[in-house]
Amino acid sequence: MSALKERYVNPLTDFGFKKLFEAAEIARFTPEEKEAYEESLKYYRDLKNVVDTSKEEGKIEGKIEGKIEGKIEVAVELKRNNVPIDIIIKSTGLSKEEIENL
Image (cartoon, rainbow, N blue to C red; front, side, top):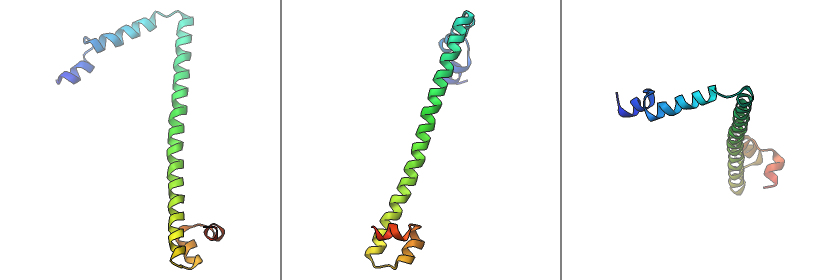
């Protein structure tokens, strides 16, 4: 068994003792302390979920914004090259008004 694997599997290592001591400490909580501990865990998990969700939504918005900007760049280039507007509409998915305002 590798030293790294043994360290995380063997409960007699420092890591194992720390986990055991944490569990033993929590087990000795009074009902009020246990409730406060559980509430703090819930608050932490809720906050973490909000942050993780916000990051994911930000990534999605960035991708969408990048696609729109890319379509606009293509439309500008096609318009510069005198490509008919109906072909630009089909190529980019932009509306006639959006293309005319470029």
